[in-house]
Image (cartoon, rainbow, N blue to C red; front, side):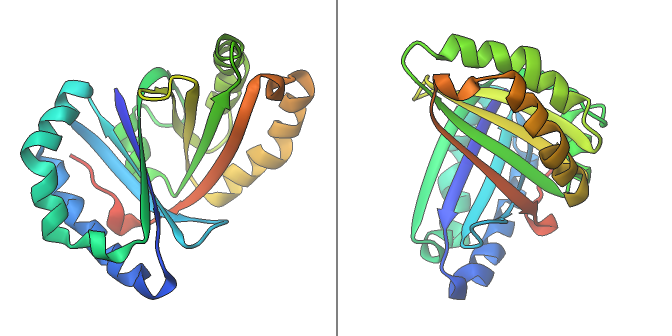
Length: 212
């Protein structure tokens, strides 16, 4: 599975235009290999639009980029609605089970997205990946209201990982953050292996949701 993570800085006066343009990506639902896409505004940085798309594999994504991407993008006029854009592609390392049976239903039901972006120090990637698989992934899988999750590694920057979790609602996410994260951090000194750690909480916009 390939994960596409998109961040756009959008001025307040252009938020409505950006959101309207984002609906043009509904055309993705008809493309072979497309698994789903969700997005919304960063709760803590309301000028930042966050979009995450899921593809069966790199080959499906590359075919889309060659055959369809520019046509949809230019037709949406979305380039005129944001000041900057950052895109990261990553490949699934492990999928986290949750309360939904698969990614499709989790994307359909989820109201919040939590994405942690980790950059490891030199030589720290094995420790971070091990602790993620053995400690954080099981904790997330058993968390109330966590519907599904993906642990992925960036293609271009191999020292970077994304931990993505889809949540039923804000209270479930907040409960995990308040009750579980402090306890888990007491057990692990994971930051010794990290150069950077940034988490984003995204309130999902139902109009941006695209499912095949």
